Image (cartoon, rainbow, N blue to C red; front, side, top):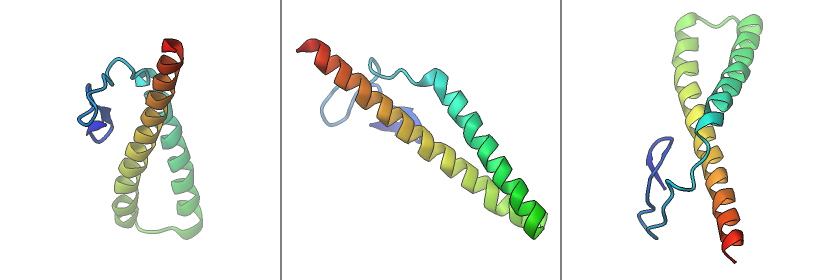
Length: 94
C-alpha cells in the first residue's frame, strides 16, 4: 500500500486498485505533523525541566523518536483516510 515510508502507492501491488484516486490526505498531513511536533516538544521540555539530561542524550533519543512517531502517525492517518474513501466509493457504487 505504501511505496515510501509515508507515501501511498498509486496502484495496489496485490489487487491493482487505483489508490492514487482515493488518497485525499495531503493537506491535513502538515497539520498532523505540526500537532505531533508540538506534543513532542512539550514532552521534551518537561523531561528537560525535571531530569536535566545531557544535550547529546536528548539528541540521541528525540531525533529518531520524532521521525518514527511522525511516520507511524502519517501511515495510520493515510490508511484510515484511504479506507474511508474506499468505503464511500463502494457505497456510492451500490
